[in-house]
Amino acid sequence: MKRITLILTIISTFLCAQNYKDYFNRNLTQNERTQLKSEIHTYSQKIKQNPKNASLYLNRGVVYSKLGYHSDAIQDYNKAIKLDSLMPEAYFNRGLSRARFRFTPSACLDIKKSYKLGLKHAKATFEKHCKMYEAKIGKLD
Image (cartoon, rainbow, N blue to C red; front, side, top):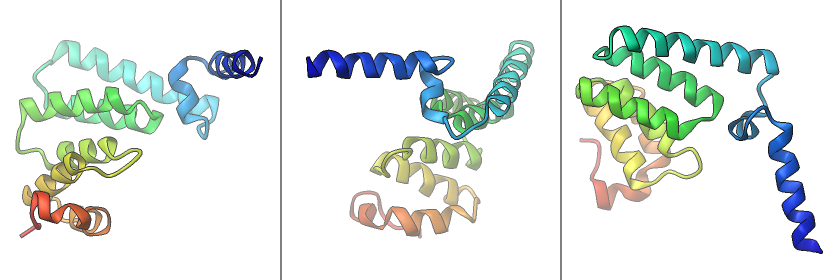
């Protein structure tokens, strides 16, 4: 009986949200969600017109992150990095999305890479969250 109740609770939670992803951005108002989804649509249209523009993928990734759609954001940051491997913001944002629930060596490597590419504020993030991985991934120097 407890198992059925738990399953029904989970299902009703997801059905109450517009879609399952919206469950993770409940702190946004409906208006904010709608506006951000509109921005995603706009960036998607621009990407169709210019699929080799790394900045468009980066910007759409930022919007996905704001919505809490971190796996979608990471995909866009990956595309941005593939198109422009010297874009520090893409590495930094991918690191933050990878670290959404916990900083890991891969997230810290991205943050470290963004610092090495010139994103100065990445240093503070690395020092605050990634010290424990310095033996694995090295220092910022």
